[in-house]
Image (cartoon, rainbow, N blue to C red; front, side):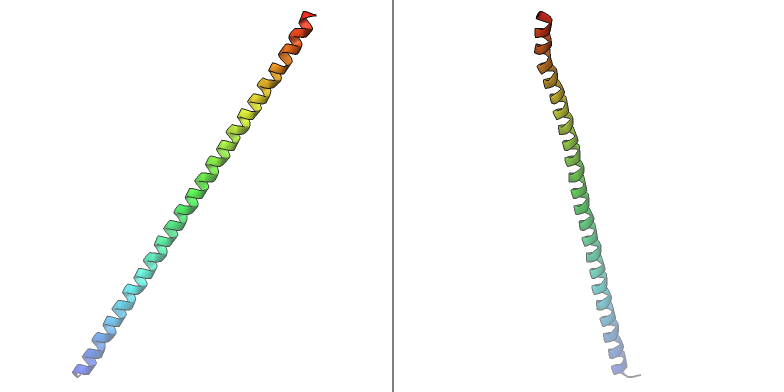
Length: 84
């Protein structure tokens, strides 16, 4: 075995090593993107939950206000009826 064989073997090993590092880097980037995407989805889901809760609280407040206004509107009419 001459030096050319060992040189080719060394070059082949270096190429395999560099390609392996590159593939590992690509896999890590893909995992990072997946984590970022999941974080974005979590933020959007959290926003939707908070918006739904706010709408429910607002609907409850409107209903309570309608009830209170209805009672206030009936009270003077009822008191007028009692005075007559």
